[in-house]
Length: 415
Image (cartoon, rainbow, N blue to C red; front, side, top):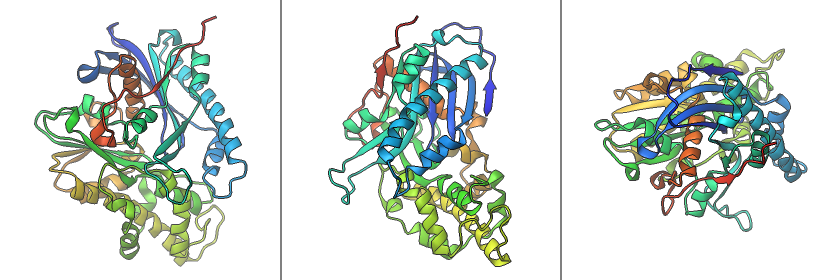
């Protein structure tokens, strides 16, 4: 569990709002308590407290198990997980309020993104009735019943209805908080999936563009999980990548990818780059699962190939980002990084080298806690959505029009 609290300002202006999200890495729940004064382009947002709570091991294992091709009773398990996660999200909201010594009934609204379990940006010809669609779980009715405050959730559905791909969604927050009158900025998120928001200098919301660049940490995490038999779920501090050598031939093979050639708007997720993808990479490289597990006794050559595979996966993330900018973005004056990948020194160093001479820096240097950013974004979208403002960015998602995102669940009667 990671937590952070800031001393609330003396101001009582604005509204206390709370944002909740579990990202595509499916590792836990981020909760951000913020004070928002104003709305839309004029919104001012102060982070009061942040808390990140890992999922219980059994819950995360059950989530990831849903992606197995032969998962038994998948629909019934998904149905139960929706309610289980609703309770966990409510727990996370209550915990961050206790941390900040803020009464739950002082909240104006809770914005819950939930946990994405499937994202279908376009029809799959292999599936009957397949259409553009997306699904997030963590039942908002459970959160509203537990907290007795309004909850806005299921943010992606309205963008889908308006013809969009429902991602990336944080572009609204990016523009509100980080637009600049003279500098064109690329805001790169390095979560499970990587995505970029492009903010042209002096541009209004209609000028914003965004797309998923490809895998962020997801492939690296998947390979680490498989190679260590679950003992390690990510490359801590990028140490394994730094110790390895990038296999250039293998990297070129991975970059020959239909998704990477698609023009924006485009989105992707675990359904493309999840654990089955990582497993195919292992098989293709001739490396056995568990090669780096505690107690394993691989040959020196097998161990070296496994470490090199992590280095190659890290370089793959870097190349998908750098190539995406080169192919699809105009001039970039600076790159601002957020998400878990910003805490991987090897990934950050290699990305800075690939984008040189454009400066690359973590979002924290701009006064925004990178760990809290996405949860803060959903607090803002809930706040502005409750006021009836459009909160999607058609230039990011491809929607036909601006739309107010989210479904409102009213609070239960207070006892």
